[in-house]
Image (cartoon, rainbow, N blue to C red; front, side):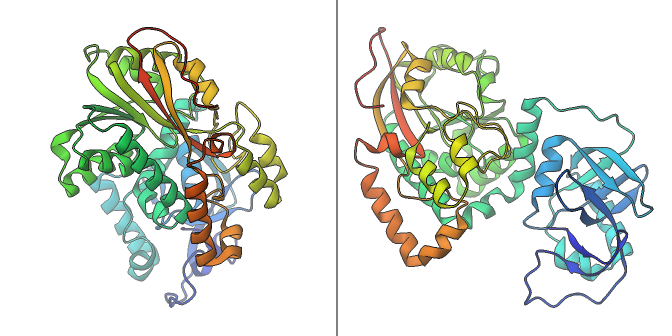
Length: 417
């Protein structure tokens, strides 16, 4: 991250925080900083460049939580070197001209050693614009900002989370089998394409819709890199905007639809989404998804075991506030029975399977350290066995659901809830 150990509110003498201790620090330099302010947190010193009426800050790789929070909120409050407290509107910039200007200013102000060590791989910068009035972002803008901020670093973060990799691989395996023989596929919330890649390599053509244009940029880059760009079409929009985004698509155009880990859990009302899917998925097609389960007894117990009683209580709610468990956005967990009601009568459930029962929440770093590498692998092996049991759907944190597009209205299949 670009935070630093401050010697004062305006200058620092040491390397940025978050840099591995075995890396030699650059020569001691007096560095001017601004201090990012946030309620209930210590000020965060940041190196900066001033260009025109705006101030620019640069995230290092990986960026700190301050970076996503600033983009999500669309504004920041900070203290200048002259002790003045000001607020500014935040813009995410990645155009070449801005990047080159900021890099040149940083190199002149702080030295090339600092830039090369901490910011050489920067793909974007934040402009703190003092000339634009600050407006409270709508929920959709907050969601878009969160994923825009995470896009450049998303795959790197997944690579550091063994539990999340395990969950994503399990979902990919089941999704490919559930959608076999159905084409094309609509994917809601593909992110950078972890599951899209598996579907494309299984031979599917895919239309992917995501709220974040920067995530879609990463998805297109992956498709070109892996050789399936000719089977991918992308459009920008949220899961609740599917009706509008696909209004030009003829009825029954898709053999199946798929969504995993996020896009649907961020929506309070999926009435329009269900209506759109019932129109564009042809009879006997499939809609397969993962849902954050409510309540999910296993993660509730994990939260208690990790001394997080408030997070455990949030697991029982129909809406989990930002930061209530581990996500900075409002979440709407749903049980399989909740999904039956959302999708009925056009879709009938034909399959339900727990995705994680023994596996701890992927941010449970203390638990993973306690069990060690081998212990963690053993837990995941047991988890894989347990989640194949029908009763696992009640305990699991995440549940995989498969629905068949009905030819006539009827009752939901009895597969457990």
